[in-house]
Amino acid sequence: MRAKLILGTAIFMGLITTFLFYNYMGDYNAATVLSENTVKVVTAKRDIKQNEKITADMLTIENVPEASVHPDSVKRIESIENHYATTKMAEGEVFLNHNARTTTEESLRISRKVKEQFRAVSVGVNFVQSVSNLIEPEDYVDVFASIKKGDQIETKMIMENVRVLAIGRKMVEPTEGEPYVEYTSATLEMFPQDVLNIVNAEENGNIHLAVRSKLKRTK
Image (cartoon, rainbow, N blue to C red; front, side):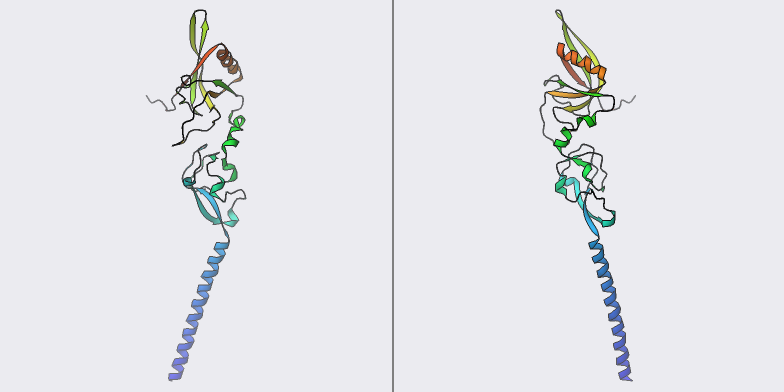
């Protein structure tokens, strides 16, 4: 009787051991397969604005299923660090190669910023004419021309609500902490017929730019 009890206990313990072993191996294999079938990609750690300079603290690495990874996904933070976002990126969104560009690439693509039927024209400005160099890309300005006629100087507004495409060679909006850069030209977007007016005004007098508010007026 005692021998049967010992034998039964041994069989029972053997079954439990076998069950636990297979259960462990199943979990181990599943974890291994999961690890082998994921890929590290770069995602936005927070919302990033279009044309905002991308720094390492804005990015993070996440593991995603290999089957769902886009071929152009960015794999290393270093590859897009200090680049500029070409579009708005939401928190958690995976970066693709075309979502970031270098400053050099940006400077070569002003034609892509100009809207259809518009033209880009640069005007020379000094510290005063450019509102103490406080005008930035994507600001909107009014253009005033001062032309000497005889002994008198006539000043009038020749254009209003003009989009600023670039200041100097800078084509992106400033980010917090970005160092100040002095410039001597501003590139404006306007219709072809307006280009004639502003070129004529600059050749025959002086041009001043006045910044318009970006805030919506409330009554």
